[in-house]
Image (cartoon, helix red, strand yellow):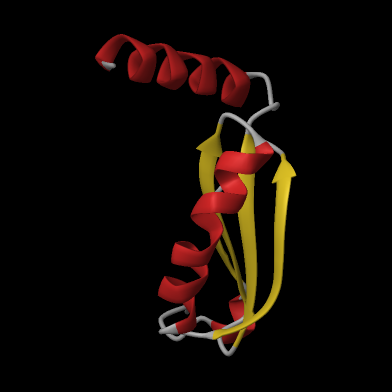
Length: 88
């Protein structure tokens, strides 16, 4: 089983490097943020993990949009400057 897990992780890394991995994108309001969770090897794996991420984010903010998509986020957490408490 370890070999299967290792090959899955390697394949996910390859997909991520070429922008073909799947990510859960959660957008919130109050604060206005976009969070990315992943990478995942396929859409199904991302869909299965999604409820746990939504539950975690809902403890901090109001969730307004959830997407599962192929992408290669440059940042995994994006905070709108208007909502940044510690910005200068």
